[in-house]
Image 1 (cartoon, helix red, strand yellow):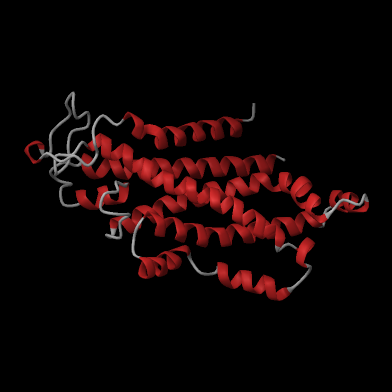
Image 2: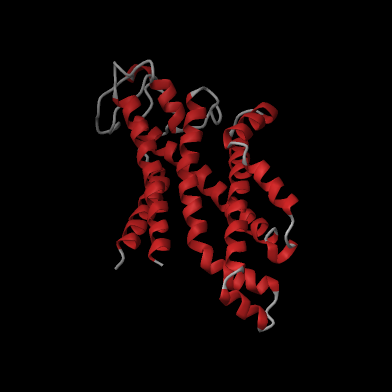
Length: 263
């Protein structure tokens, strides 16, 4: 079996485990007990408590649910919207128009963080704003990838043969071309997910969190920055969670890219 398939499978399992781990949280992540601040590991608090006496393990697990929940939901929208727009804007549908290519290049030159700043300024911080910003910014880049890959496939011999048989444009795009660029699509989503994790964590760390009652890794790192010397695990574990999650998506994306090179 190709080692890339094994790596992809392990990565998917790890992502699912991180996302679903909140189901095994032993305590309420928001329940504070100032009498039990900075507690060490115990039967009730397996990883101890933070500066407010909250269960650190529960907060860590719920942080994964929040961050990966945003990633998975945004990724699904990006996949659907970007695929449809990218194929519709391909030369098979609209023909060759330099103005369309120019507009796409101009829009995608804007970094994702710029969209996030604009949306936060307009609607305030929160999960919905974060999902909207991630979806808009990465959908545009994903759309450009799909359009470029589709245009390249349209020049290949197998497409010309299918056209000569009388197949419709829609059938050519979604039945014949789509399966051939599917690995590229998933590779982009995986690598972008790693970038989105860092973006979400970074914005939470500078104080633009996802909400007062929302637990995420960036907020945990922000809250622990003043207690790192007192209890290093409060800042080390969330950072490790971010690194492991981001690295998992990167490894999965690279492995999918390896499948393309093998083909």
